[in-house]
Image (cartoon, rainbow, N blue to C red; front, top):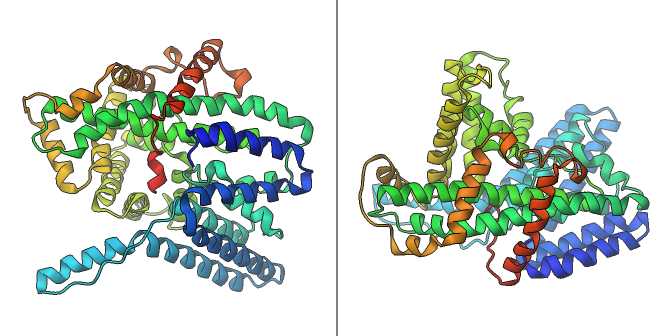
Length: 477
């Protein structure tokens, strides 16, 4: 079940909201836990049991770690934490990377002789990268003393399974939401929360179905068969995916943040106009913010962060972005995409570019950063390294020719308009677009932003009713 589906918009969400408003406070977390598991099982089916095992394992680990800390046995608590972390990563590797690892082994075996290892058939659990990181943050926060372990399994299940962020984030650290889970909002605030959260949800829905889904066929046409692609086709395809992934993922985040607010929870922001960044360092402060901060707090800083020598700092940055790339998918394209971003951040650090004042040569730096991001997305989207090189060749060397028929068919008026709006709204100065959408709640939005969003909602609803929506891109991660 996806947020931009008829089942969710017309049935699941209204029923759950009504039930949440009706039940006594002591049942609210249990209700959200149960409906969230139903939401997950809707598409995951039997894979639900992998998720349930993750919930039970991390809950038990948190209780044991809490008891060890209360008894003053800090070393035992840390050992338990590492057992839980390794267990979480083991599950993630087994389900997400085993097929990739076997394929690489078979290539190595084939290089030296005959024979191969049978590749296992594994169905990837939806959202495994996200709920694994939620589980790790829980056991680490409890071990550090940043949060108390949950005594109620229903409360903990609500944290892990809460459906707005379950499939594709934002990545919520346990200490960020602990107090909100323990003390849900008073009944009198629920209507106010719905009034604040629904416009944010509506904004995300519009981003998804009116922009991301409209340009998706254009990107698919370019990346589906890049051989012989003209220079114009390659650039149009790369720009289309650049628009698609931002409006798809930030649209999901808006919907998740808005949904959570309707239930009284306040989630951290996940995007801050990343295509307006003036450097790649600035871009990663604005893109998928919760993932960047997760790696910063749980991996980068424990490795020494920037408080060490220049060489070690460079190593830390490269390690982090190799992990970021691998987190996104089990393919060399993702690893190379991570390495590409890590190398750019290292280059900015060594040259001092990331330390320049934001207003200095802002327009030129913004354009250069945007181009670097577009080039990076080619690796991210391409089905293979060979396909990525094919598209790069078309982008960097003049190749005349007509657009592929699939792309020509996809470039209908809604797609062209969405592509133009997407690039413009991402790049133009804040004062010229609805840049204040994230500054405060609905009452803090400028009038033009309110009018634009609410006017677009009926069109988005019609698009959903017509069945012309697609799954969110980050569902595969």
